[in-house]
Image: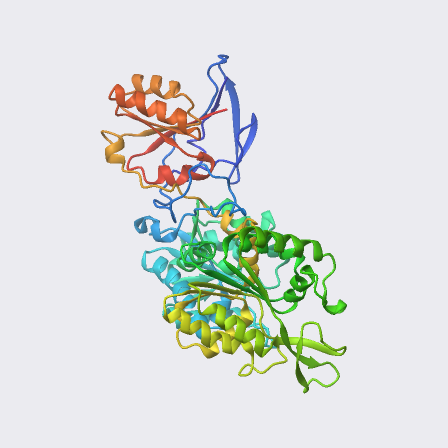
Length: 577
């Protein structure tokens, strides 16, 4: 059975092909960025089972990957047994000459701008601004999209005022746009008179939170390329980070997003040892999977704050009943057992600085089993702080995730500030330090003189989701990258010839037959089975066939990055079904 679909007259000449995720394409109607395509049966041969996708001009999307990867890996971030991650297309490796004249929408993180006075945000802000400047200097028509508000402000900043702030930082005119549906008109006319366009504030948009398809389509109307630079939102499913990606010809990571993702991946690397994780905060049960991953990765785990009481309870030691989280005992015992099997050390906070509920000005030190009624733990005690400092001095890599001190303690007195001094000392001696959580980042920003030596993540939710093994929707929505460079000059004798791609090429019989008949074309087979690919490559080499080649890859996720780097035109795609 041959399924034929010719839509060369139905789509823009520069539109990139898009294939829905899944191994089967049914007869009937297929949606292609808002257009309907009718698939028809032709022929009755059982041996001929392919979907023919008619001639079109290929659109370069991106050439390089974020990092090397296992070809055909499952589309997820990682599991407790693997540190594989999504390999996304990046703006850094997108051909800059292909940006000129294109409408590019950038989802940026307004928090970097609104909190720009915080020293730990300065470096991230520079990278985020560089993404916008890079696109502008490349001749792209830039649309900015974000949500902005300040928790300590009585009113939300107006779009005009926010545009003025951006103009000042970027040193180009940012024009507020009142109607997102008018982007197409701006693309052709009005946008020529503006340097950069700012769309509506998404703070109070219910469609944004609901990831409304209609709203996503409206936002991306007339947009060719989507650049996500709001990494702090990558754990959420939003119209502006996930929904719009399906309506754009290319979806790539901005410079800030790329850098944050690279730093996130480093958290689970084990090149430097001993590796110590200091884990604070509360809510043990929802984070149990993350703790298991850390226990499988680190050499030392230190639990502080409310989490410490769950570990103490797991060891069978007495703790105040009001500090034990319900249903956490079994998971705590599982974690302790895993640590014992791996022969890693688990430390827990032994003494606590506590505040009196009735008289908040009263502070006192208690051991974990002697906390009196009416007193609440708010910080590390001196014994625990000394013990942690001693362990830190032996480590080459440290992760501090979660809160250490509560708001009851003045910053200059808090244990976080004292830990900052110790972590700065070991970082200067070559240790890697990762700080996760808004409170911890602020405390370190106030005490450390060398923040560039730390990797800091203000939004702890992103890191917790990553450590749990949960896919990050904002990352998954981006185009994925084929993880190797392709030297087309060595693959084909003439890489300027038009290219036919066969997806799911199997044993290669279709390509071999077509290549023999059409020597004026080049043929590329994409097949996930490595053994079949190697067999096809061996046959091509044996018979010195230079107009056909085969790659082992999952074409569902890597097709666009592969064909985008091809020098000639892509004229036909066949899909074996």
